[in-house]
Image (cartoon, rainbow, N blue to C red; front, side, top):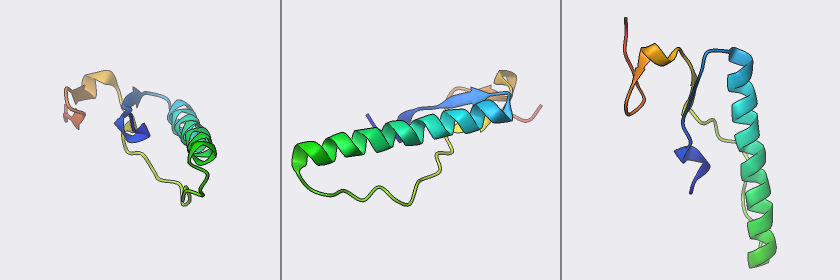
Length: 70
């Protein structure tokens, strides 16, 4: 499962930032473990911005992650 497959909606800016940071940390740990298993260096940087975590209210979203203007 890819980190990019995680989706989230938060109404708080700080929570969005924390969630994105947590995903970066999880991906970094996963890459380090993978490097240890395959005994080779993997490119991790630059960090990617995951647009799948957005600041919005749940009422502003429908299935599939498309924003609905109300």
